[in-house]
Length: 275
Image (tube, rainbow, N blue to C red; front, side, top):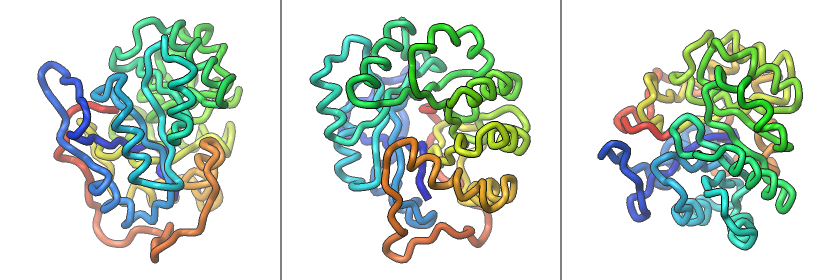
């Protein structure tokens, strides 16, 4: 399995309080304990609102996680080409536009950074956005050659706008199921019907302030909704292709088969909102 969306919260590095609140730690070691149960062979570490623009934690997390893992950075619009190249060398492959939590101020300026990173290094741009806002953002986002949308776009009401973007090549993260307020099964099937290569499953660990945190059986839920062929793509190959990560066989006895046993929520104790 390729985990297309995870967060690392490392207290050794700067964290920015939200109304005086800081998230609990969720380190590489914490993540590995869960990833082993899922047979994860790679993934994307995504910068959240609490990391702001300091990406030193991300570089260290990628170093510790090793081959198969890539990063998605949160950066200011005036980021230099030199820093973009340094982050690329460390394993970063995308830029995040956090429109949901107000991290992005000037959307046009950040879009230009995304275009510059795409031209320079082939990066894509990931949108943390309420999909009900996508129609109004369509023109501003047009310069971006490759995009993905976090957490199915959060809103069932905005799903038509998500599907319009999927039809033009956008990818959609099947992540944060507790954050999505619509019909999950219908949304997954609708995205896959437009483009079988669009869905990318991820844990969204540590599920910070998600109404329903990630459970180990979420992977089985996807398989049951999509069927084996589409699920296989959503659980591994779609994201590996999007992030440019080779597809190794699971090592160390890991398995991408069904998770047995009762549902267990993971990361439910961490209640700050990372997204």
